[in-house]
Amino acid sequence: MGPTNNIQQFGRAKNALLDYFIQKLLVPKIYFDAQWRGIPIPVLAIDRAGVGDVHAVLFVERVNQSFGIKGTPPPRGLDELVGGSIEELRSLPCQFRYVAVYDSDTVDALYSPPASTAQRALAMDGVGRIGILSLNAIENEPTVNVLVKPERFRSSKEIVELADQYVAEHTADWEVRA
Image 1: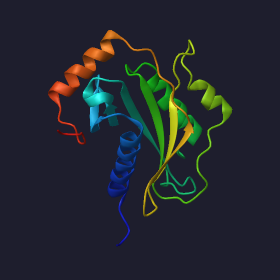
Image 2: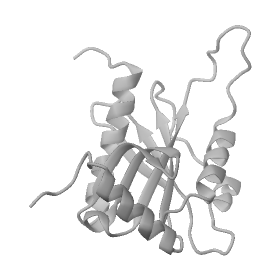
Image 3: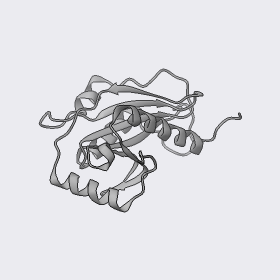
Protein backbone atom coordinates (compact mmCIF):
# COMPACT_ATOMS: atom_id res chain seq x y z
CA MET A 1 0.00 0.00 0.00
CA GLY A 2 1.39 3.42 -0.96
CA PRO A 3 1.55 6.44 1.30
CA THR A 4 -1.76 7.98 2.27
CA ASN A 5 -2.58 11.61 1.66
CA ASN A 6 -3.62 14.07 4.38
CA ILE A 7 -7.35 13.62 3.72
CA GLN A 8 -7.01 9.85 4.05
CA GLN A 9 -4.92 10.19 7.21
CA PHE A 10 -7.48 12.56 8.73
CA GLY A 11 -10.23 10.06 7.88
CA ARG A 12 -8.21 7.31 9.53
CA ALA A 13 -7.84 9.50 12.63
CA LYS A 14 -11.64 9.93 12.73
CA ASN A 15 -12.04 6.16 12.45
CA ALA A 16 -9.58 5.68 15.31
CA LEU A 17 -11.81 7.92 17.44
CA LEU A 18 -14.84 5.96 16.28
CA ASP A 19 -13.18 2.78 17.57
CA TYR A 20 -12.27 4.56 20.82
CA PHE A 21 -15.89 5.59 21.41
CA ILE A 22 -17.24 2.15 20.46
CA GLN A 23 -15.06 0.68 23.21
CA LYS A 24 -15.81 3.38 25.81
CA LEU A 25 -19.54 4.05 25.33
CA LEU A 26 -22.69 1.95 25.49
CA VAL A 27 -24.38 1.73 22.09
CA PRO A 28 -23.22 5.11 20.74
CA LYS A 29 -24.40 6.93 17.66
CA ILE A 30 -21.33 8.48 16.05
CA TYR A 31 -21.36 11.31 13.52
CA PHE A 32 -18.50 12.62 11.39
CA ASP A 33 -18.30 16.29 10.37
CA ALA A 34 -21.23 17.33 12.54
CA GLN A 35 -22.55 20.84 13.08
CA TRP A 36 -23.32 21.14 16.79
CA ARG A 37 -25.02 24.42 17.57
CA GLY A 38 -23.35 25.91 14.51
CA ILE A 39 -19.84 24.74 15.40
CA PRO A 40 -18.14 22.20 13.11
CA ILE A 41 -17.30 19.09 15.16
CA PRO A 42 -15.20 16.46 13.34
CA VAL A 43 -16.43 13.63 15.61
CA LEU A 44 -19.63 13.74 17.67
CA ALA A 45 -20.84 10.75 19.69
CA ILE A 46 -24.14 10.46 21.52
CA ASP A 47 -24.23 7.59 23.97
CA ARG A 48 -27.04 5.11 24.64
CA ALA A 49 -28.44 5.01 21.12
CA GLY A 50 -28.76 8.79 20.95
CA VAL A 51 -30.37 9.52 24.32
CA GLY A 52 -27.27 9.61 26.55
CA ASP A 53 -24.31 11.90 27.11
CA VAL A 54 -22.94 13.94 24.20
CA HIS A 55 -19.21 13.69 23.39
CA ALA A 56 -17.65 16.31 21.06
CA VAL A 57 -14.11 16.25 19.64
CA LEU A 58 -12.15 19.11 18.09
CA PHE A 59 -8.91 18.37 16.25
CA VAL A 60 -5.63 20.23 16.46
CA GLU A 61 -3.17 19.14 13.80
CA ARG A 62 0.42 18.78 14.88
CA VAL A 63 2.66 19.79 12.00
CA ASN A 64 6.40 19.68 11.60
CA GLN A 65 7.24 23.23 12.60
CA SER A 66 10.58 23.24 10.79
CA PHE A 67 8.73 23.63 7.49
CA GLY A 68 6.80 26.68 6.42
CA ILE A 69 5.83 28.69 3.37
CA LYS A 70 8.03 31.67 2.60
CA GLY A 71 6.39 34.92 3.61
CA THR A 72 3.92 33.36 6.04
CA PRO A 73 4.17 33.60 9.79
CA PRO A 74 5.38 30.46 11.58
CA PRO A 75 2.63 28.17 12.87
CA ARG A 76 1.38 28.89 16.36
CA GLY A 77 2.76 26.68 19.07
CA LEU A 78 0.93 23.45 19.73
CA ASP A 79 0.15 24.43 23.33
CA GLU A 80 -1.42 27.66 22.05
CA LEU A 81 -3.55 25.74 19.53
CA VAL A 82 -4.67 23.24 22.17
CA GLY A 83 -5.45 26.13 24.54
CA GLY A 84 -7.53 27.85 21.84
CA SER A 85 -9.52 24.65 21.28
CA ILE A 86 -10.06 24.32 25.04
CA GLU A 87 -11.50 27.84 25.09
CA GLU A 88 -13.73 27.04 22.10
CA LEU A 89 -15.02 23.89 23.81
CA ARG A 90 -15.58 25.61 27.16
CA SER A 91 -19.00 26.97 26.13
CA LEU A 92 -20.05 24.05 23.91
CA PRO A 93 -23.21 22.41 25.28
CA CYS A 94 -22.25 18.77 25.80
CA GLN A 95 -21.32 16.55 28.72
CA PHE A 96 -17.91 15.41 27.42
CA ARG A 97 -15.47 17.54 25.43
CA TYR A 98 -12.16 16.56 23.88
CA VAL A 99 -9.23 18.10 22.04
CA ALA A 100 -7.54 15.54 19.81
CA VAL A 101 -3.96 16.35 18.86
CA TYR A 102 -3.72 14.80 15.42
CA ASP A 103 -0.27 13.75 14.23
CA SER A 104 -0.41 13.40 10.45
CA ASP A 105 3.17 13.58 9.28
CA THR A 106 5.64 13.24 12.12
CA VAL A 107 7.05 10.41 14.15
CA ASP A 108 8.21 12.66 16.98
CA ALA A 109 7.39 11.84 20.58
CA LEU A 110 3.74 12.10 21.56
CA TYR A 111 2.48 15.51 22.58
CA SER A 112 2.61 16.01 26.33
CA PRO A 113 0.48 18.90 27.57
CA PRO A 114 2.06 21.10 30.23
CA ALA A 115 0.39 21.22 33.65
CA SER A 116 -0.98 24.69 32.84
CA THR A 117 -2.88 23.32 29.82
CA ALA A 118 -4.30 20.44 31.85
CA GLN A 119 -5.37 22.97 34.50
CA ARG A 120 -7.09 25.13 31.84
CA ALA A 121 -9.08 22.06 30.79
CA LEU A 122 -11.01 22.12 34.09
CA ALA A 123 -14.47 23.66 34.30
CA MET A 124 -14.58 26.92 36.25
CA ASP A 125 -16.61 25.24 39.02
CA GLY A 126 -14.57 22.03 38.88
CA VAL A 127 -17.44 19.92 37.51
CA GLY A 128 -16.02 18.73 34.21
CA ARG A 129 -12.69 18.57 32.46
CA ILE A 130 -11.92 18.69 28.76
CA GLY A 131 -10.05 15.57 27.71
CA ILE A 132 -6.90 15.77 25.65
CA LEU A 133 -6.23 12.90 23.27
CA SER A 134 -3.26 12.17 21.05
CA LEU A 135 -3.93 10.52 17.68
CA ASN A 136 -1.18 9.08 15.56
CA ALA A 137 -2.48 8.26 12.08
CA ILE A 138 0.79 7.46 10.32
CA GLU A 139 1.05 3.93 11.67
CA ASN A 140 -0.56 0.92 10.03
CA GLU A 141 -3.10 1.02 12.85
CA PRO A 142 -3.93 4.55 14.04
CA THR A 143 -3.80 4.89 17.81
CA VAL A 144 -5.62 7.02 20.39
CA ASN A 145 -3.86 7.86 23.64
CA VAL A 146 -5.57 9.64 26.53
CA LEU A 147 -3.28 12.41 27.77
CA VAL A 148 -5.80 14.16 30.03
CA LYS A 149 -8.79 12.08 31.07
CA PRO A 150 -12.11 13.82 30.38
CA GLU A 151 -14.56 14.39 33.20
CA ARG A 152 -18.30 14.89 32.78
CA PHE A 153 -19.64 18.44 32.61
CA ARG A 154 -23.05 19.32 33.97
CA SER A 155 -26.02 18.41 31.83
CA SER A 156 -28.77 20.81 30.86
CA LYS A 157 -32.13 20.90 29.17
CA GLU A 158 -30.41 22.56 26.19
CA ILE A 159 -28.05 19.60 25.73
CA VAL A 160 -30.91 17.09 25.90
CA GLU A 161 -32.99 19.07 23.38
CA LEU A 162 -30.02 19.53 21.02
CA ALA A 163 -29.26 15.79 21.15
CA ASP A 164 -32.88 14.82 20.52
CA GLN A 165 -33.11 17.21 17.57
CA TYR A 166 -29.75 16.14 16.13
CA VAL A 167 -30.56 12.42 16.28
CA ALA A 168 -33.96 13.04 14.66
CA GLU A 169 -32.49 15.08 11.79
CA HIS A 170 -29.20 13.27 11.01
CA THR A 171 -28.13 9.78 10.07
CA ALA A 172 -25.30 8.42 12.19
CA ASP A 173 -22.08 7.36 10.47
CA TRP A 174 -21.94 4.48 12.95
CA GLU A 175 -24.67 2.97 15.11
CA VAL A 176 -25.93 -0.37 16.32
CA ARG A 177 -29.03 -1.40 14.38
CA ALA A 178 -31.33 -4.08 15.70
